[in-house]
Length: 94
Image (cartoon, rainbow, N blue to C red; front, side, top):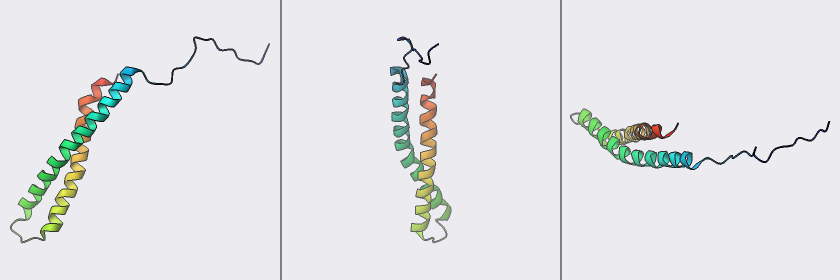
């Protein structure tokens, strides 16, 4: 009995992903980037408008309030953009 392990030629392991898996991942990446790029400006405009509507009668310091609306808009836009992009492409994975 020998201590050498013999492998057959047909037992090679292919570590690279197949073309279908690669294209699904690339499609998801492109869709995520596009959906975030669309949703961030929309969310920023929405939250700035919402904050401006809420404090317009109070003679506020506009820089602070509009910056807060923009910051919340960025966070919400990234979240909802990623969510929308993932939901649009999740069917491509098996």
